[in-house]
Image (cartoon, rainbow over all chains, first blue to last red; front, side):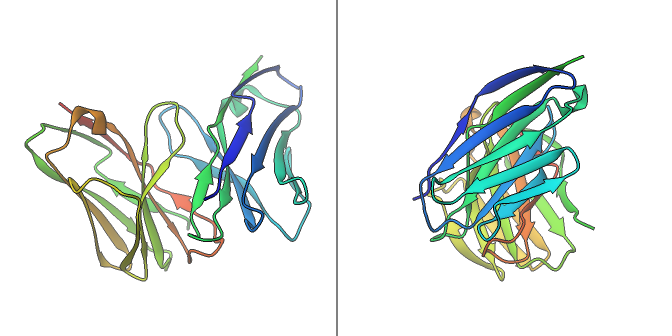
Length: 112
Length: 113
């Protein structure tokens, strides 16, 4: 089955800095990679996703890049703000079961 | 509208109780899911329903019993739970199960005493 590794487990940045979270996956047939943001006590919310037919996708301050050859994808947040503080999960779609496998999460703390 | 509604938001139950968690979506999605999430961990898949039929059961103990009465509703029946079953239970839905965006409900916080 699919295995997703996510790093780092915690990330502290100053407001205005950029933050990068990286994930690797094992199933070369996986073709869909969403990122979820989960604030304390709330549900995971989809913030951006990418499919394997593109290499990069941007939405305002967030972007995701995908390297299919290396089987890794990354989340980039620019001009971070305190409200970006949350746990971020990457995920990959299992080609066999058509279900998501999540990374272990990254706790992002943005200090004012 | 990308709303998945779950009730109740909080539930405290004893180990001999029978209770149910409910989930509803009106997006016309044909796939619905139950996930379990413990603190500081990612969501873990429990069940997948596709076109109202159970398609995946991730070896979940029988004290958890899912039910899909129709394409908009998904229930999780709980019986004889253990304290370690205390967690956030998340319902989710997607258009299909082939790479479609998965939307999560707010979750039901379950405490077993």
